[in-house]
Length: 180
View 1: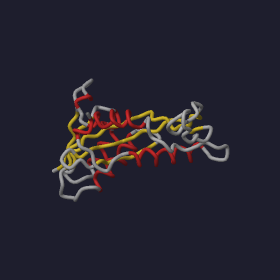
View 2: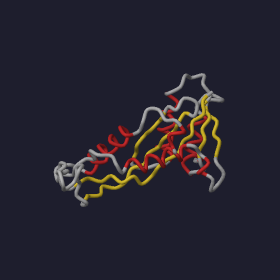
View 3: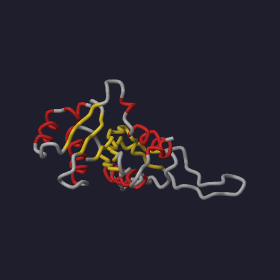
View 4: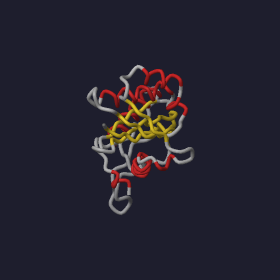
């Protein structure tokens, strides 16, 4: 058996810089400087789960977070464990978690493969994944290397590149003590 705390972090901005970063200059700025101007290309959603027994992080970045994206996340979790392992999920009551589409997909899995435990309404803060998202939000502001926008690149290219940047920032393993 394994226990996976999971949730979504919606509305991560896919933004691009409009000018190259400036290298450090003694007496002017000690680190790379970035222009405050940016171009917005919509938002992305991070679907993530932490195995509470091993600390393994499961993550998926999508442009939305509907039932089909949640089912894709469940497939990712399903593939990460041997077929005879029971997977207990801790999650909130988001509509994608309780939808007919999700219930139908879960019904195709072997009996006992997935067990869902829902946090109380207005109690999603009880889910341990929230500490991970809090740390992600604090540290993601410091991510360098966000893609730079040019007229020849499409918004879908930027969203894809931003997804890669988000996933490269997420650790493979996470300890709940790291949330502090």
